[in-house]
Length: 175
Length: 248
Image 1 (cartoon, rainbow over the protein chains, first blue to last red):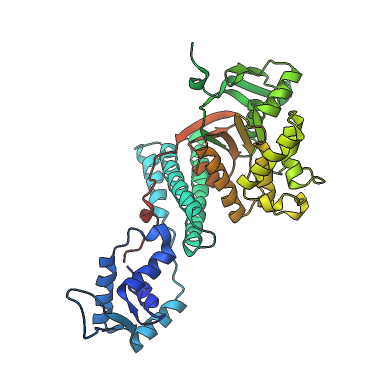
Image 2: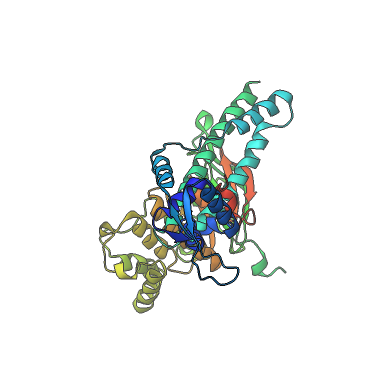
């Protein structure tokens, strides 16, 4: 779990670990199902060590219970504010696949069109999974919006594969 | 003899449709073989002009082939007379189009019941069926609205209800989400999914990879012929966590 994400979840109010987990699961829907509680507590203890959150343990506590409430420190608040205004964005990672096609064609390892077809099938399966998950979400849930974004990116990738297919079909018929 | 239940619902063999003559001859559909099983959802994708709409018209008896065979429910339809063909279109096939093709002067429920009336159902049975279908597509509260008062997604759901009016063996859809935004597309997809679950056989011609991705089988078409076929059911279903990166 990215530290800043969890930090920003704490920003709402001092919270128990399980509350943070519930907030994340609410926002991620079916995409957050694989997220386990352990990850969250590991990240929280790192944040605590880094002085970005403070943890308060109630004095009366049943044996073996984690009942710490986590709150942002001043440093933590600053980090969240910086993170919110950051404009980083995942860069499209297409070079690897592109180079795979180039290398396969140059060395005669495989037909680039076969590679494109196999990739298309994989992306269509992912898109199908995403659509089915989106259909199962209630209207306008946070998770539905995330799933829409994933579906749109997969559609963009599928369109790029069409362009790859066109280009490599053209090269084959010229050679 | 094979029971009807085991033969494919749709069968096409060396199906061909040509337009023009001589130099101008266009093979819109070029020797296509296709089997569609009962209860299957098949999507056909391809660039504009690849022949996918023509194929759909041949399967639904809206157009006649230049050569080859088409059977629906074990019965050849490529050579039957006009009257029999019209009857087949009314009772065995439901059509859904990109531009909805609703009658603008009729209300939603009148649009839906019209096809049942044309198939000679009693007015009372037609009305009851239409009300049930509007309920099924989630538009019972819009029954008395004119199409012009409805959104694109709602109009398409009315059109789908109309297509189901006579309990067709086969539903054929031509770019059903071509005029719809993202949310309305999801509604239509949802509706197709529930039809699929109820055992309806569907053939959908589309540009929309979201529709294609939720079909059982996807056929890619180029220049009138099938160039690729993919079975999509199974796959990565369930493993959604692989779709986003949550780790550091």
